[in-house]
Length: 430
Image (cartoon, rainbow, N blue to C red; front, side, top):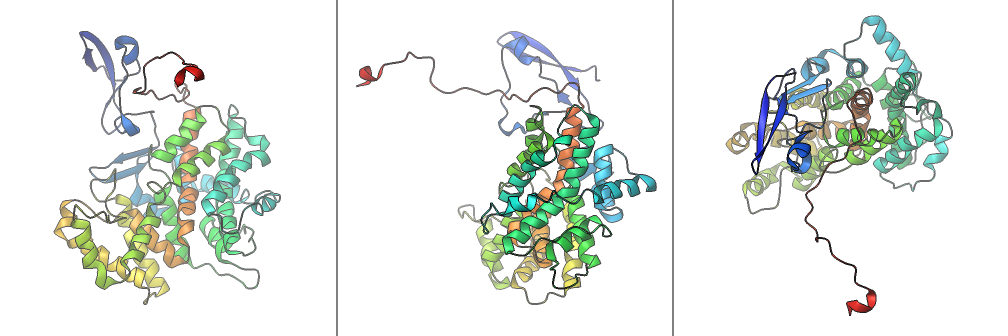
């Protein structure tokens, strides 16, 4: 704890507030006693200048383009590890030993099956239901199937719930996809790794044998690592807020999925792909570059720049390489959408306007292209994001549950409605 303090004076009344320092990053002023000492709250729309919690999980420095999971740079984890190793790290705080990794992989693999009655649950949806709508409902419904892991006061039950969600999320995601295209569900196969198993559940059919392409599996695994956590973003904050009420973990994750569905959050890669579709062909790129530079034109380039990263998104560097690996592996030569993406990428990396405004291609730009090349429809993009982010949500939720200082979330407001007034009867209102 820092011995530094900060003084706030309001109408002659002063409050001395403690300053807290993190391991790295900016210090924060603890305003928890501000109201009791001054009679005032702070006003911070979107909580962009407010630390709502203390966390040891993820660190971001947007100005320097740094993303750390438990202190480890994201590029090192994506280059050398796999997704389940990242899951272990986020959950337990350290990289696993070989024995711990084998045990963790085994436990996750043995939880990938979902209750058979979940199959009937899917038939209640229309065939054209959005896969994210299905995911919100199905994940929330897990609490109706697994009563033995909803007691959040029991560490063992919390661990079981965590294992179940990490393991069952790809199964549910694949089922949502299969249902949307009218194909039969494909059950998990225990001799495959996490991501290969997911690809098989999405793209295999009973009529023939499916062989997982290792290049695509590795690429998707890397996408999962890059999306596993991202500090106190909107969906993570939603999970924590829901969890602060004591809600069961399945309900909390369902709330996170619902928040992630928003186009300003998890739908960004889908929006980037739709922009490429609007451009259509490489020869139209100059026209759209001009529109993007015109302040009076409503057109905005999607997939460029980032709210947090004022430098190059560190995840985008890895995704750029991964995207080109996938395109080369699949030998895609005649897809106009991908032609537009590659050309636009080159322009953005060289054009002075983009460089000056730091509008570098971000992870959503590259991941959208990669997932489309793999065969996923745009409606599945946010589902894959939810699958990857589940472990981050669980790690953040677990940290919150174990934090003795945690209280139910209750943001304050600046009231600007009518002052107190007396009720007027209907007859007197004219």
